[in-house]
Length: 98
Image 1 (cartoon, rainbow, N blue to C red):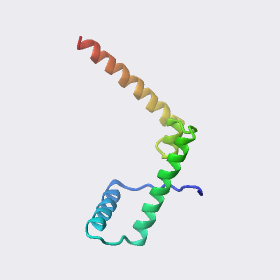
Image 2 (image 1 turned 180 degrees about the vertical axis):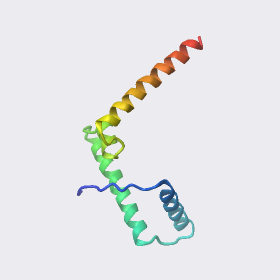
Image 3 (image 1 turned 45 degrees about the vertical axis):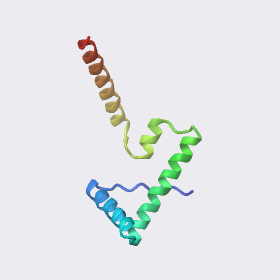
Image 4 (image 1 turned 120 degrees about the horizontal axis):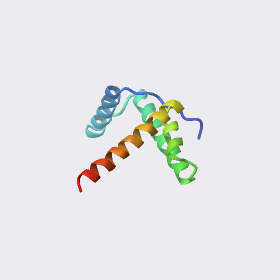
């Protein structure tokens, strides 16, 4: 499988795409060329991720990077700091509830 290209899609565009696919299924319609291409790329991405997971070579951080969720180490540090804070808050709340 060749290199995957991830395309940023706005939530409203994604909602419209899902609606078009659902409508095509319900009324037995065909999708236009652009929708078919997007669907194919999404399917390829799922296969790629499944392959990487089965190889056990994919960590959560690598998965986030593949999905372009973490663009820099600064964002990663912020995510980690926020996670530590929320864990500490969760512990405080559970101790208060005793």
